Image: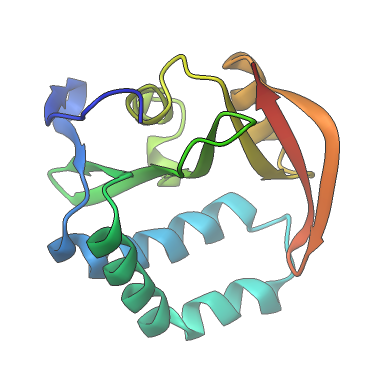
Length: 165
């Protein structure tokens, strides 16, 4: 992350803070829900349904991830967790943005930008994005990313790599 995160209160009562073990269950559900909202018309229903069916395993993965490293931030509103972002360890391409999801009713509020800035800031970075997800691609282009020609096929579709020097 760009710096050691400290809880910060933002407009609309949202706090961005590091994830803790007690967030694992809510993170698992948020991950499934926000993934479904983001990809409802972009990936086959079977792929989305499979993620919901394996929610318990996803929650366990979140427990392990939060316990092992501190690179996940959550956005917490009065109704609970409404977004999260995570980065990996820096490598030759920069800081990898591993995830950035916000519940659909928070789209367009600036929350994604706040999570992005708290996680990546101005660092050189890269990410993988589902190619038909034009909304996400525009968001990342607005933050200085561009496709570098690398791609990979996954169950849910074609992912393209975007980089920001």
